[in-house]
Amino acid sequence: MSTKPFTDHVQVRTYECDAYGHVNNAVYLQYLQQATLDAMGTTNDGEAFWNIRRLTVEYQAPARYGDVLQIMTWSTEADESHAMRGYQVTRGACRVPVLQAQIDWDYRDRATYGPRSVPELHHAVPTTDVSVALKPFVAPHDNGSRPFRWQHTVPFYELDSTNRVGLAVYFQWLETAFFNATGLAGWTLEKMRAENLVSLQYRHDAEFFGSVKLNNLEFVLVNNPIRAWSQRTLETPQLIGPRGRLVGQRVLEVGCGRGVGLEILLALGAAHVTGFDLDPRMIDRARKRAARYGDRAQVFVGDAERLDAGDASFDAVVDYGVVHHIPDWRRALQEIARVLKPGGVFYFEDLLKGLISVRPARVLFDHPQATQFYGREFRAGLKAAGLRVQKWRQWREWFFMGQAEK
View 1 (tube, rainbow, N blue to C red):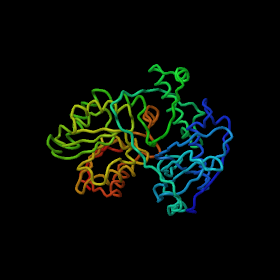
View 2 (view 1 turned 30 degrees about the vertical axis):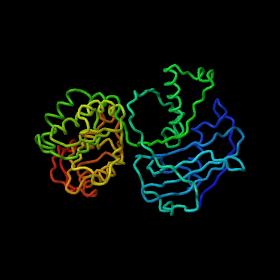
View 3 (view 1 turned 120 degrees about the vertical axis):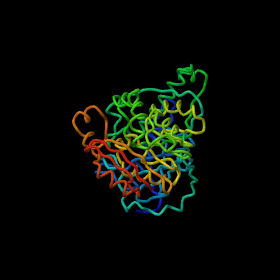
């Protein structure tokens, strides 16, 4: 693939402008997405497709109906796991800067949503003859404010050719949520106009998670007292051992849910426990529990396929029945091995395909059926990730627990 910048032109159409006469922010994302597919010579309609992992967009000036925009994109980093591209949008013959962006792409299997290796054709040497200084991704942080929540049911027309919500739609949701929030605070759109106020979005930092969230039934099941009692009384003594087993250790819990596991691990003597979950509802609950332990506990929204942690960061990693939810569970095991210190231990208990894939479970629960595993496959995944099985107990092809050392 050429390492030279790819350039395209588009003339702004009337339906791409908002009530202020400006090109809507979400429309720019459609421009960037199309320019990327054109630059890579694909239409995203095959067995695999290009998927956005994270992006940073900085809006510099507005564009209006009739403006001719130049969209330039180039490779900044690429290997078998992802392709990073830079973008610049300028306006008119004078090349007035309108937008600059950086987007991290990976390649996904259409059937399973698991990652595929980026085709070698796209392992391009980064372009060097571009003078645009791109700003890095900035992760969101909790500033202590009370969050505003808005619920939305996804209609069919918001899905794209990958049968998932289109990229621009997410940012339309954010815009809607913003105006709903300001309206509740007394600043409706009408009042803003009357006061001659305009809200402008000057930057977007976004990360997209590919794993599947719990459905409503499973959300209820994992948030009931019986589940907590079982986790404390029956599972942990067999999985990890007695109080004191984790003394002084830094521990990571995969899929921490509402924080029950976090409390259990701290009670076993862990010096610090970090928990993450893909579901923000769970993290909201876990954050309240974590607050009781001060700087000994930390929770955040995260994805097991891309752990936001440095190499060799933890003495132990714990899975209380979460890995079967992860579409690319092999990649998650590799990430777990990466963040474990040499000699660190991965404690795991989980469900197997013989239970998850029977008809009642398929109907009642939302699991990625195409990627469910048998016990022998999980053991092979551990070995491939560089983890040596130390203990293993398995009940048919229904359930298993064990320990593996790095």
